[in-house]
Figure 1: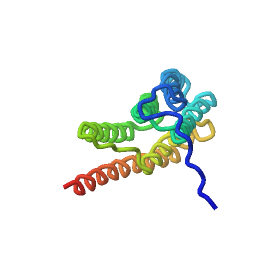
Figure 2: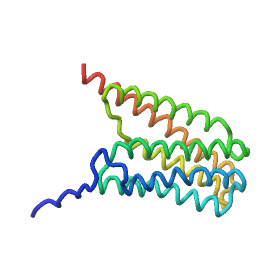
Figure 3: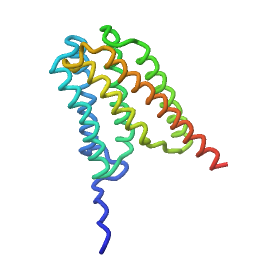
Figure 4: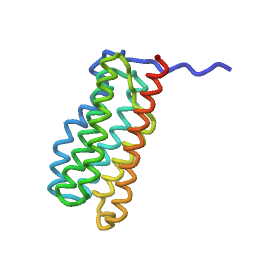
Length: 190
């Protein structure tokens, strides 16, 4: 019995026009209109539907990238799209009074700190790919925002805040995981 053949990589590291990158760019282009809709309408079926599509498109671009070849541009664009959507939605929802400002502040601080660490690592030639906890973090953040936008759960503020604070906790833990992993790499290189 032979092992299955590895997937064929259609795109190399330097490719720009890939299906995964097109999905990511589509997410970025839809971010503005979706945030305007959230600001204007709050919890409606249209806003949660669009949020669901944008959240699922994150899974789609990851699947396409793994299947057809990851790229440097995709590794750069995908986290930006995640941050624009999550931080933008939290900012709009906090501005509307639908969620407290504290989760936005904590998540923003974590994202800025980890982006800075990744930037420093990148200048040293060290790649810091997304870790499993980061993927869970993004899922929880998207879910928390989705529950605020979902008409069925719009009145259950306690439930919404529980999910949102769980997302905040995962955000902090995943940030600590990245920092610990970086420290282990530095120790191994010495």
